[in-house]
Length: 369
Ligand code: F6R
Ligand code: MG
Ligand code: MG
Image (tube, rainbow, N blue to C red; front, side, top):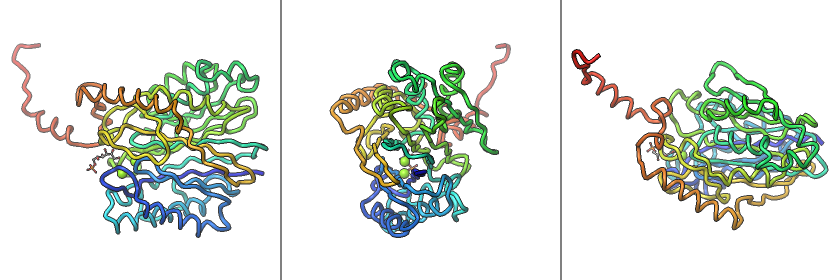
């Protein structure tokens, strides 16, 4: 059967700062999806990562379905009502528009969805990250889909060896979707030239060149482009199908052990290592570090089995310790140099105001040029 998997994620309020949602908030979201989703969706699951709630839904209505998106929107509104009643911080933070207009894209919540012909055995992963931006997935995707050092399947599997087609979006462009398609291995260097810039170029989807099937759908939402001001980092969601013509689950997970430095962390204005955490983890140190969780599912006729928590394993405990060391390392230098983002990427205006005020106090020494 043709199934659609839709993941929609939003921060609608959290306890004690930007730490995690309350049980009551989660219950309100769950109740709305369960009750109002009857007859519309086939199955669903809820997760949270840091202060963001993710709703995963399966259905047969295709991507960008108005009713499915409205269901998630209404569930987040129900969560927002609870957040307000409980005095949670940032209640309704990612509900950036007053009214639903047919699709949650561009309204604040992050969306990743894909429609595909279900294989007889269909494994997929849902990644959700907090205190970072959509480009945080660029490096793990590049390595898992184009580097045999991480994905042995590129040389061991005849189908994986045909390479992949990446669709990359220029998220700085706000008048329409500016996208490019590049294929690996031929375009690997061009792809790297784009994907090194996580703030601007973001992998939107990846397809198998062997079968043409979709392997990855990742969100490309930039809240700042919607709200025209900082309202929180973009905290991306991503769906990845695995095995057979696609990389194995373990090949997709492997690059996450790097805990590469990404933008986000405190006030969305620093760099920090992306720490793979167990599902339903909060954030703490310096409002971070940036975290990513991964739930693994199987789906048959749209019915989900799982999740299994892909980062809940002793190996990842060791990785988390290394991520903490990397976080500690960069935090030792506070605001200095690359520890804090460049002036154009800062999510707060305090430094710009200071520089503006200092500007008139500068003088150019006579005869110094
Ligand atoms: C939120 C985040 C946090 C906040 C910080 C200050 O996603 O990254 O680090 O930016 O806690 O929050 P405000 O400015 O709301 O007091
Ligand atoms: Mg928040
Ligand atoms: Mg968040």
